[in-house]
Length: 397
Image 1 (tube, rainbow, N blue to C red):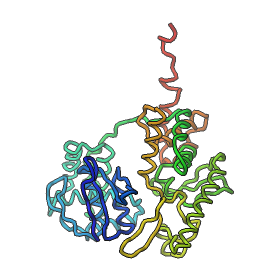
Image 2 (tube, helix red, strand yellow):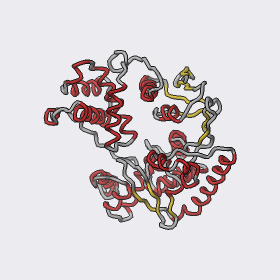
Image 3 (cartoon, one colour):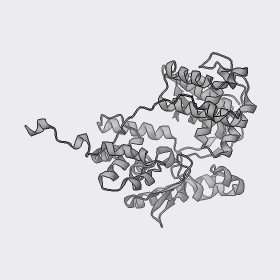
Image 4 (cartoon, one colour):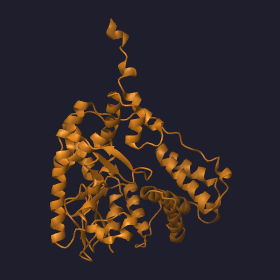
């Protein structure tokens, strides 16, 4: 397989697959932050910076179908083939039911570490702090990113190198900065949603009406909408947890109409000889025929089918995250809202407005899928019961 990376303009690179592609190649691009699909030229665009290029090359390398030789951005050393060891780590992570995104992140950080410390150096746990310090000082990564790298390396030393956990206690954990969530007012929610169109408008309503994360929303399938029980099933959420959220009553007619449109799209795909969708890994092994059943189709399918030029195979993925993010950003600007808001602000607004309406914090915690109520407590800081609810003495003069 061939992958062409070319300069597109001053800020972006184009990524093309002249010899065809499959779902693995599509995922390799989709995992790059800031990627955009250019439907006119049928190419992907990624930001022209070292971080995005490194991320894309790492994703391709992890597929095991390319012989990638590239400079490591952290050490300047040539990448070496650690496929067997990394495969072992990947298997251990999957056995412990780590999510796909966590597995990808851990493999990335472990690979960087192994390339920086070849030979016997990699066996020294003290190098963890050196590696993390370099990330913080030279790469200026956030505390969350630094702690993610630490978690990956601790996994490597504990379960692959079988190091004594006591010897790993002295590693430094980065202190996370406390940031308040960006919350829309109710009026702002209406303005932003009003500036969206078609399925993106419905998607935004669902994010605000249920508190779902963007990736949870786009991963919904037809069978996850339960009109009888008035609920939506969120499967494989953060931490690989399933949960139930309410089905907003106002959206029932709109959702039924939308599902009927999805049915028409699926029927057309079937009539043209396609219509299969990617199934959850376990279920795919048990019942591959279910891939063409309507109930397994995405609630928000992409507009065009992807095409593998080598095999001629065609399929349909769900709406790409970048398209939704771009539409919401545009809607926020058009609404004249001067906040650093995003799709996730709908989730923050959902939680804050529920607390304002008098719902208890434990209920909100369950709806959001938080493991610890302390995570949910952050929304109490943005209610009009704190500093913003106090009358200034100046206003009393």
